[in-house]
Amino acid sequence: MLDPDRPRGIASALAEFAADTSLVSAPDVLGLFRRVAATVPAYGAFLAERGIDPDAVRTLDAFRELPLTDKESYHHRYPLAERCRDGRPADLDIVAVSSGSSGRPTLWPRSVLDELHIARRFEQIFADAFRAAERSTLAVVCFPLGTWVGGLFTAGCVRLLSAKGYPVTVVAPGNKPEEILRVLPELAPGFDQTVLLGYPPFLKDVIDTGAASGLDWSRYAVRLVLAGEVFSEEWRDIVGRRVGLSDPVRDTASLYGTADAGVLGNETPLSVTVRRFFAARPDAAREVFGDARLPTLVQYDPGSRYFEEHEGTLVFTGDSGVPLIRYHIADEGGVIPHDEMLRICADHGFDPVAAAGTDSRGLPFVYVFGRSLFTVSYFGANIYPENVTVGLEQPGVHDWVSGRFVLETVEDEAHDRQLRITVERAPGKDGDPALVAHSVRDQLRRLNSEFANYVPEERQLPEVRLRDFGDPEYFPPGVKHRYTRG
Image 1: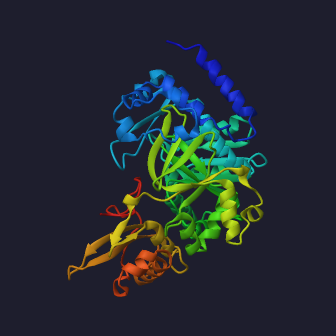
Image 2: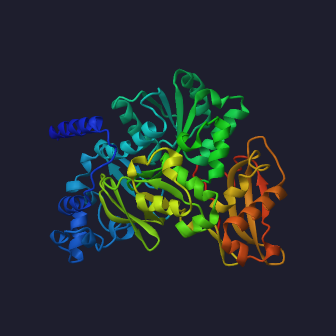
């Protein structure tokens, strides 16, 4: 049946979005909890089974005592319809499918109203960092198109910026390098700036392939929106130089996003400034973030996505087609309030607001590591892909490698464990594997105290093997890359 009320609701929400200049929502996590408990059948049943009366949850302290939800305890126990508002998935107009990398695929329906929350995060990047209100902008969506959340969802959110009045035009070639490099030279000269949105290693491949074919990226005032992987500040600088970025702090922004709830947070000039400060000080970074790895560091709107930290992992609450209350996403990381982050930096003799020239709307910070299942253990030391990446980004190495690699431990002929790294060459390039091995070892020693102290010195130099770009066994094109093998 045609719903005559729905167009009016959408029109009202779009009008509110168009008039909003704050980009920050009023926090109302208790109100969201009460609405979800009353209107989402699965969550009402979830609470009832545990003897919880929603009316008794009146404070944030009481809210924080509610049981966590996750895929096993919630999504796989209740039918999709019961997890939607009013039990009506037909009210939602698009469905994304999670990758299923740690379990079976999960369906995530949402509507254009849900996209409005996320469009504010893109607006924060485009307006605050890229100055898209003043510059005509071509947004090139390079995420895969299909049931995955990246491509279609990003295109929809960025188009909403155009509807709000920003001079932004979207083209969506998806993750097809030949199509990106075909349309970009035709369109980009007509705009003040070009924003490439995609996964970091894929965009680097596109940039390198374009440069190898004679494309002068510096002509297009390129900006980058990245998602899906942690990358180093060395990587940001290398790729920035290759496309001619004048200011990596403002010309790049990473998203913390999931199929579960879209974009949860985004880099800002302030968060990038803080991250770059700690990237140059591994000991201070370990003190602040509690790990040898450098995490992704973003800011978030607590009125849109409310974060909590649980035993070193992240929990969030947010509205969407499938509303999520205290959802345990299991990403390793933590939360740091805005003023506390400024105090931490001050304790280390640094003023990030002065350095960045902005406080980025006073939003709190959330930091995110890669999942722990993407590590290998070597002599009892956890070896993280993020540490190896830095070794590939050193002078003398980064010019001839793509940035992709596979990390594994294997038995050698003497049945001793050996750390092996299979590295992908950049298109048409070659180099010395011994140079890679020494560079990676040196960065592991510098960044990973477990490696430096647990692994005997004579076993620290990894075995490095080189493979051609797009090698079908280790680096097949068109699929999301896995950096480790068991």
